Image (cartoon, rainbow, N blue to C red; front, side, top):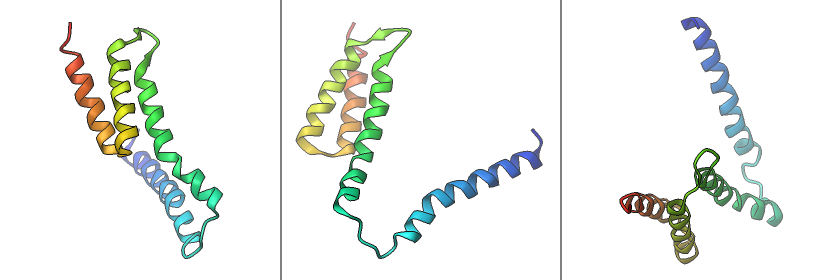
Length: 103
């Protein structure tokens, strides 16, 4: 791929990303969303986080890992207790790192 082709591709992707992120903000500026839409949008961050976690839990080649399941259980406990995405991510990383030390 030449530099010119890369630049065209990069700028095209940039325009699409900006359009997808900025157009809804500009179109909804100053408008109140219905409660149903607000409730639906509130489920996006937990769903995205759950998709990332489940992707790491189930490895088709290696099967189900007890370490990953235990770390996920700890993350669920922290999520129910705190409701904080950052504490969930930190707990999962630390728990999994410590569990890899167990033979």
